[in-house]
Length: 413
Image (cartoon, rainbow, N blue to C red):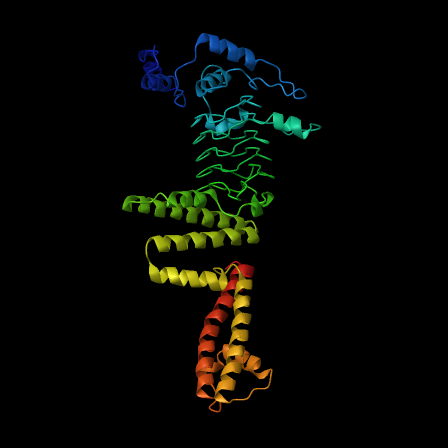
């Protein structure tokens, strides 16, 4: 704490009531700006101190703050964190690895507003050594419950979150560098702007809900986190898109429509960023899927903005090539057009008295598809020449789409 802060601490009086503004000023003067709640009463402090000193028993599933009668509050955690820092509440963010984290194994923190708390190295599950020779039930019993908790801007560097229950929690802009999150439940979690790095363990995490909706990931700083250990096939669409979809039916005013467009743009950004991160790690299949979803969402934006021409062109690209990510779709069109025009040539031949061998309409259609229809022979009836030119026109676009699709799919370009 600076000398100036020290002088201020002597002038700021300890609040005697529940005035949150006064407490905020007081904690800031004490160098504990992350604290926002009034200090807990002496009786609660004694109870928490006793629990803090309670020896855990992994075999029996007993932990300091698990199954306590009065669940922990933010004010409780603030006091515990200050006590954990020898009463100073000073946290060296540049050296969080040397800091002892709170033992919150099995604790019920559901729905709490924990924004900005210094929870680095928090123990919310069994660590590498403790998990050895332990049953799956014992490991799950040790998992912290953070469902729907607000952890925006929280510092969770090095936190042990093995099997942690994080469904619908907000980890927006949270620091998760080095966090051990193996088997954690991240269904519906908001990771927007969160910070991860190569030490963040995401092995076998549970990402999606029963509708295959994944987390919110717009603006996530993926760093060098290993994304290959995640089963991305379980995610059909990201929470960013799902949120925009849910808001769609509520749009009435022009301002609400503009806000909806912004939400969809955020979803596009989430898909693009995730696709790039996956592609850089050689996860081509997953990257292709999320890149495709980003294009689908972009098409929704074009429709909302009433850009008819761009929307129709985008729709045709999706229909023909799946935005370059579904080459099999182009092959279906290729075969379908050739067979369809072969049937048309057979029918027209009978109408105009032009006789074909049974296989000739198919060969003729194949040839005209690849552009010969623009330069049809004079011996061919005009009705067939006109139809051939039309097929050549279709063929031009389908061939271009086919090349684009295969280039995108197999070369990532």
